[in-house]
Length: 208
Ligand SMILES: [Zn+2]
Image (tube, rainbow, N blue to C red; front, side):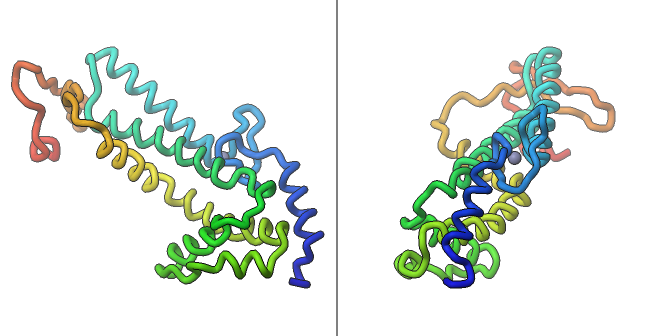
């Protein structure tokens, strides 16, 4: 690979290594806000979570519990935090990794899955290791990761739905959560569901 010499790649890695990055996602290119130490993307997630938690806290204090939707919304927002931090864990320190295992191959494979819907690069790990030096591998990984990370950032909410859904499925069966009622969005009033009144409203009721 004469056109991307190993030295140039090593310098680029050094440059990235010395950058201050967002404390959650560690994106190498996104500016970090001084006070929160987060990038704009993560900070927006944080602010929405704060708003939802505050809303739920006030609501629970007043009404003694939350609606399913309120709980769901805050769960999803927390999962968005988890997903952003997961991005940081997955990509945060690629410049110190050897990338001679399946990680670089995997980056190619998920890229091809996401953009052309086919797994085009299964089994290329040996070829990558034979043809690229360690800093070249890091540099290529870095370029690919920018695409994959953009995809993750655009799809953060759907990724969070997946996390919450999986957590719900994995949970052992237990008592149903307490449902205090539902909000009538036209009036803003809460219609209480008294425990004595029987089971929570069915799906049909909720959609009305
Ligand atoms: Zn971030």
